[in-house]
Amino acid sequence: MAIDSDLELMLRVCRGDTESFEVLLRRHRSPLVGYLCRMVSDRSLAEDLAQEVFLRVYQARKRYQPDARFTTWLYRIATNLALNAIRDRQQDSKLNGGAERTSDGEAGSRLTEVADGRPTAEQELIRSDRERIIREAIEALPARQRAAVILHKYQGVDYAQIGKILALSDSAVKSLLFRAYESLRTRLEPLLKGGQL
Amino acid sequence: MKPKIRCAEREQLFAYACGMLNPREAGELGTHIRQCEACLRVVESYRWVDEVLDAWRPEEPSPSFDSRVQAAIATGATTSAGLWARLKGGLRDYWWGSGRRLAPVMVAMAVAVVSVVVLRERHAPLRPPGQTQQVVRTIKQPSSGAGLSQASIEASSSAVDDYDILANFELLSELPKGHGKPEDN
Ligand SMILES: [Zn+2]
Image 1: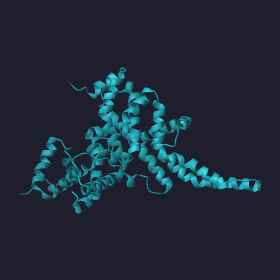
Image 2 (image 1 turned 90 degrees about the horizontal axis):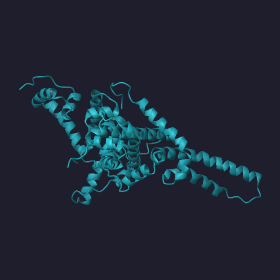
Image 3 (image 1 turned 180 degrees about the vertical axis):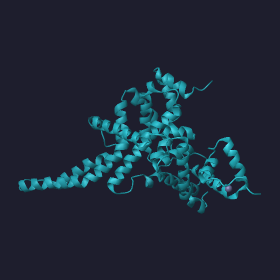
Image 4 (image 1 turned 45 degrees about the horizontal axis):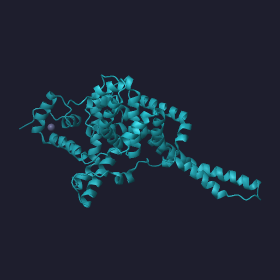
């Protein structure tokens, strides 16, 4: 049985088929929530934003342009919402004159357990520590660099699509990613020196 | 053996490491890299970064995620669900911050009001500390997110609607108009 493409499903949603929307929801919820969690470093906010993305997709179903890839559209909405949320938080932190209220301290404890074998407590601690260093390095990037890295590295979005999502040319995306990786290389060096690889 | 072409820019080496070059460019640079240890080291450093990033595991949606989306759509509560997300999400931090900023002011105002009342009605039994605490509790409530009732969200819907539109509008103006090079972010 052939799997329906996002495009076919979305065209059916346009015609009022809510079951097709549920298929799209099930197909894209995990990557989308994962993406937004990494973008805003706050699981509950990420889920609220993801919910908002799906609602906006549903609301705008009649305006969907079949020439744009569905995931490009989805991630464009998600990225705009995430960048807004990050900007609000940064503005708020400036007004407060303090550090951005990211969830640095809590995030480590919120990491989900993954059933990939059974790591010992010590292994899990090392792994969580490594994840924390990576997360902090990506969080420290300017928001659009962060989006580009996460889309490229974790969502498997190619740079042409990243360009459409961030409204940038191909060469601008490459330059954005290059600067992000340069920063990450420096920030992740403790992992190399600490032999935590 | 001496490399045939001169060393590439770091950005070009990065594009090579990430498979962003077209086949002709990649072929040429690949030939150089195989003969140039300096360029190879740079390419490997980017590959190393890419490998390290693999360790960051993704978060999964909570079990109630689908039903929350479906319920919002089924009830046609698209706008208020959007507001709910905005209130619980973006505005939660905003209000949290504002609440925190305003708390000392509100406490000061409450103390001032209480003082005036005390001065005017010296003989009447009052509970100034209780009143002050009440003010603080009211301000702090939104920080929990869950402290907001659906009614209060609906009551403030117009303001939040404006905020939402404004936020998106601002974002569009932030994005570069042409397809130029991105600025520092
Ligand atoms: Zn070279």
